[in-house]
Image 1 (cartoon, rainbow, N blue to C red):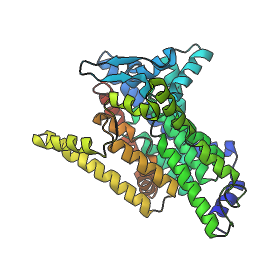
Image 2 (tube, helix red, strand yellow; image 1 turned 135 degrees about the vertical axis):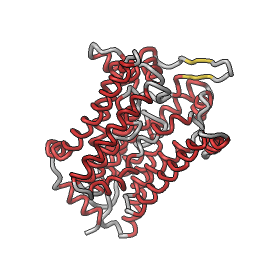
Image 3 (tube, rainbow, N blue to C red; image 1 turned 45 degrees about the horizontal axis):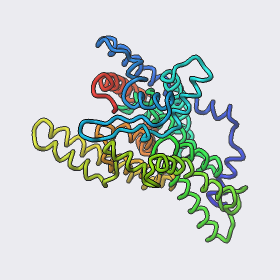
Image 4 (spheres, helix red, strand yellow; image 1 turned 90 degrees about the vertical axis):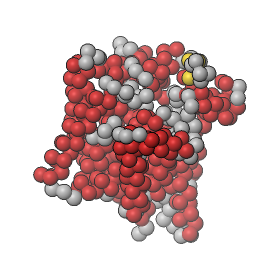
Length: 399
């Protein structure tokens, strides 16, 4: 029996939605507890500084741009004294659409709807991360992976009216659909991820990589034991999933090009107005190098180098642990796009939030510990992350 046939058999014996929810319950409850702790720390810290924690979560930075799109549509821009043009066309539409829907069917404001969407999406993301980690490893690793995602230093972004949680949820469940041979579902979710953030390209690439690999395997095996239609050779559902995957991102980018009158590359001009672009990491390298011109800024430079080295090491371990190809493609592209973009450098930690497969090696290590040892570690890191998130959001915060 081939690996893909084994997965097909596993699917046939898989528990239903209620059983899957019961299996994920410890992860979801742990995730909710960590996020509640973070919100409590934020509320206390903000109150001490005479600030509104809710305003920090829903009405600052990108949150304001999203709610403006939800309320007034596209076409708003800000021209800065240096000539830069900040257009709201830079923000992909799925989150504003959901904010508009929430405001239309409930008494919530657009900002309130964005906050609710993020809270629900963060739980969906946690469940999706658990599902992927459990599929690749086991249930205990799945729980640990979710907890590690929750206690990331910038985890407070998961509770903001930003698109990171929504994107991660769509990406995680699309990857899970790929791993379990549900090609149409995978392509549909990838298309929705592409309507959420530009990095939706990574989800599309993961779907395509898995599909191409399935076709290649099927051909080498003479059409026996592929992935897709009923455990046989890849067929119409696989092709349909491939076709669906890029439609979201491609559709929005082409619409922006038509809207601006600058053709298919019009979206790149919009991003350039924000000084965003892909430069292979040159701007980031210059930013790090500049830290070594003084002290104690050099310590920050060392920290950045160590952080990048840790990401590279985690990815290498993912490869050595033989993570499925779709996860490696997805995590690799998310990481490269985050680190090699010329965007504001303070944003890079939150741009890396969706790269959850990088946490799996750490989750495997944590899962090997006894609960009496792992629980204090997770609790300690959760408290540190909650304090840092409150400090960060009351300071420079995530632009």
